[in-house]
Structures are given as structure tokens and as C-alpha cells.
Length: 206
Image (cartoon, rainbow, N blue to C red; front, side, top):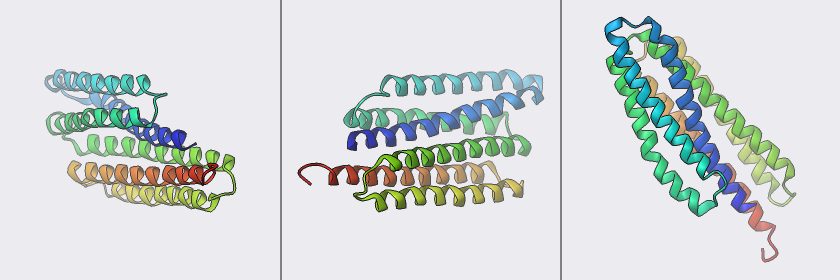
């Protein structure tokens, strides 16, 4: 169970970022028809670069989907620079061909929705796993699940407030997305750590 918990942590981490990538690409594609002809070629090239990085990220994740904890720790370190490059390329897109506030707000809304979907999916997965856990340290697991759910609600409220403002800069919007992502990672880590502790308590030597 401990090994499985670690895999869940890494898979949730990877899936959250893939969901964000997909939402970003879909959002940019949907708005591309509104660009002037002289900007469209540049936009198409930037989206192709983003798609390539997204595909490379997913290929690596699928390749290691069934790997153990040690292998996933190495894979995560390998994937982190790819994610950073994707973020940098999105920033370049926004600064060059996506300067309109409407484009930025739409992308923010779509990516924020993807983040919330990832939060809810992770919480549902934790609930399902918690139901199968033994009574030993179950309270610890339930508390971690509750924190994940509460964290999702708090982040969603902040995102809606920013979205309703309608005048925040992309720097502020992307900063909010980054903070939400970090919060997800912390909640995800804490939850699966609780499962690992529960698994350790259930071992014959515990």
C-alpha cells in the first residue's frame, strides 16, 4: 500500500499538469480565429511548440505509469523542467499574440477549471482508497481527505473572485494559478503520506 500511495502521489502530480496543458491548448486554439492574419502564423507556431512539449510530457508519464517510487522520483525531476518550459512558452504566447484581456481571462478561466477538476478527481480517488483502508490510522486518512476537499473549495473561491474582477494582469492570473498548483501538490503529498503511515502501521513489524 505504501508503494501504491507513492505512485498515486506522482500520478496525480503528473495528471494535474497534463490537464492544465490540455486546457491551455484548447483555450488558445479556440481564440486563434480572432487573431489578425499577421499574428496567426506566429500563434500557430507557438501552439505547435506547446503541443510538442505537452506530448513529450505525456509520453514520459505513460512510459513510467507502472514504475515504483524510486523510478517516479527520478521521472518527476525529469518532467519538472518540461513543465517549466511549457509555462515559459505560454507566457511568450500571451506577451506576443495573446495580449487582449479577454484572451487572458478566458485562458485563466479554462486552466482554473482544469485545476479544480484535478482537485476533485484527486479527492474522489482519496475517498475511494480511504474506504478500503483498515481502521488503523483511518482518522489520519479521513483528515487528509477533508483537507484536500477544503483546499479545493478555498482555491475555487479565490479563482472565481479573480475571474469576476476581469481586470487582473496575466502576471497576477498566472501567479494565482501557480499558487493553486502548489497548494494542490501540498495537499496531494499530505494525503498520500497519511496512507503510507497507515500502511506502515499495518505491517507485521509495526
